[in-house]
Length: 71
Image 1: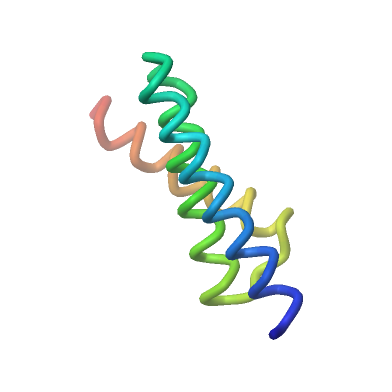
Image 2 (image 1 turned 90 degrees about the vertical axis):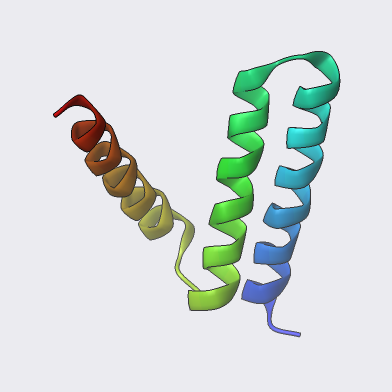
């Protein structure tokens, strides 16, 4: 197993646990953070993108989505 795949799978698992914990505690921000981490993990597994590059790309996607909602 590739180390990149293992890291991505760990992110997905951690994100799922974070989302569940947020749901149990009624913390919507923690749920969103967990889903964000799950998406990052899936992208990391699929494309093997480095964490910094992945964070930069996800930030760009989020900014574009926010701009479209406001427009």
